[in-house]
Length: 226
Image 1 (tube, helix red, strand yellow):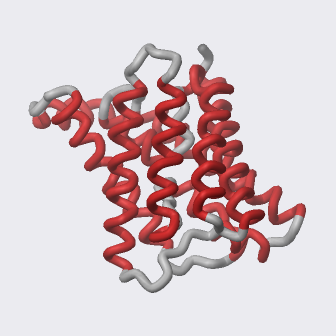
Image 2: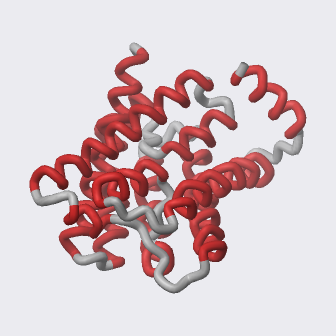
């Protein structure tokens, strides 16, 4: 497998995930059921298409979690991030071209009247669940793992959409904000998923793998990042 194939797969997969997911949100007027099924099945389609090539992250914080779990190198993580943001921005760029930049505001994340820290906490918790499930299934050799990943995204989006619109993905959150100019509360959707991904990795290591040797893990991570 050539390196560029993995990066292209991440760009294309993120394009599919963000494009279909945000497209459903825009066309449905923000209906929670439509959004949940849109994002869940979009991830599923992308996973079955290119998941075997790159691992099917399509989300910068899942790539961060994979790096923490030593599934990918620091170099690959950075390349994945670039590819994911390119894919997400490309998807929303097409919407801005087809309709208008203002139309992309319909896909911008928001948390209504909820306090910022509470919205941050919701995003972190939702991402924690998504990350722990992703890391568990990522290591599985079963072909049904893609179904599990897509179903997990569907479930957490169905729960969280009415609260914070269930961002959980900095690339998905940044792209519509970039074209619409709506940046209110963007920190919630950038920092919340990062904290949630790290916490999800810790939970996965403790509960699923029963590994409490975090000192050794952090040393190996530092060496890989050097």
